[in-house]
Length: 166
Ligand code: FES
Ligand code: FES
Image 1 (tube, rainbow, N blue to C red):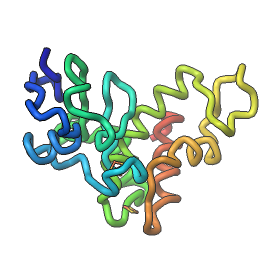
Image 2 (cartoon, helix red, strand yellow; image 1 turned 45 degrees about the vertical axis):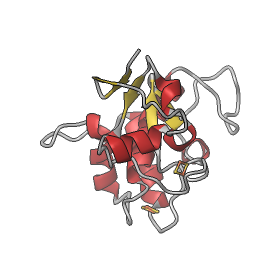
Image 3 (tube, helix red, strand yellow; image 1 turned 30 degrees about the vertical axis):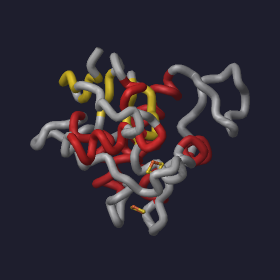
Image 4 (cartoon, rainbow, N blue to C red; image 1 turned 180 degrees about the horizontal axis):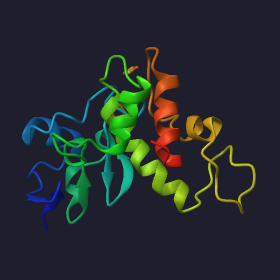
């Protein structure tokens, strides 16, 4: 079975050690997905696998056989940004920009998780639909590290996107 990457069938690499991240960046030239730590600590490599956010550095490409992968390249057109991309611009949610694709892919999945009512560590009551408070968004984005000064803008952009106000 092929891997479906941004709607295209891609054969899994013969070498089972190739990570999904290296398949994307080094073999398919999909360099929007970034390699930060390459060990699951920074979130820069976040993509969607069947709509769920996953770290592509910790996913073997062969494990993705038959699954749908979405990368930052597929969320918008040149002349029409994804609403979360527009929100990042609106709030100055980036400085280096290297972590931004992972932040955006994570933010897109995060909204789905909250709409489904999935609780986080800081959700006050498990039976409630979580609110898009800054505390809630910070907790849910804690796997995506920004090491410069853009974190407040990132949280503001994602909060606005989740609340549908931008
Ligand atoms: S590159 Fe994958 S988590 Fe840092
Ligand atoms: S914007 Fe990339 S580390 Fe802060």
